Image (cartoon, rainbow, N blue to C red; front, side, top):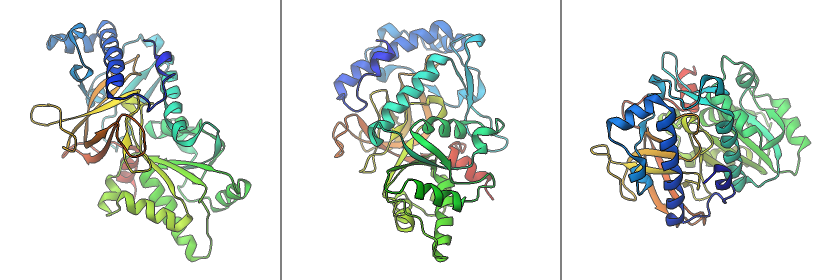
Length: 363
């Protein structure tokens, strides 16, 4: 099945059996393609005697440890077909993942992101406030997963405005002007979790003491990139939501889970606080001892699967995150597919989220 046909499917419309058939067929095709076109992937699959034709379920598609993308150049296209290279976030001294994209993969990533996010925000482009600084996308030395995330989500907005200056200070006059220009309109907001907390929430709290207040009651905030630093500050997701609501009236807040190794296939949080796998991707949780599949409610290592990657063998990856699949096809929000929560990084795993790596460098 061609991916352009898969994109016609509503993101949360297929039940377990329908989605299982689609994922199995597509991931078998991708596995065969990458074996033919990526020497390193072919060698790894041959070493375990993998034959995609014998696969009956996508659960049996071998996974690559996500760390491999920090250690090897894995691509299934020629150097001439590489459109751009995206690197993961990393603190000083850390190796970063390099993901090689051709135009087809890059286009499908963007189209998939649009399908997923617009199912939460609606199709109309809204005035957009980026809670970050403009140099993240202007300065190519800073351009990595953080810059790619901002550019990716910017397509949903109009009159895109940055809330912070290049010194990471809140542009108070600029934000107030933005709110005045779009009074009464729904506003889309995007940023990374720790940056929002440190440079937006804390500054709004300080300004409120000076009788300077901001009304974001019409705002829809999408944020992600890791919780490690906020957990150490004893800030839970509920605290994060409650305090933003108290300081500026913001009520519609959606976390998301995603990674540069599978850009496009993000897992959005619904109004019940659950992260959801769309029809374009899935997650499996596996036991650390033998990598067998966990039961619902049982914590395990998160495996992520995506139907997008064409230019690199990133369709089945074992992450360094721990999570719990809570259920499938029966979330109270009505969306079909698996829903889950992320517990955090595995012990001794490197910090890698955009929010967490920024927080690690923040003084």
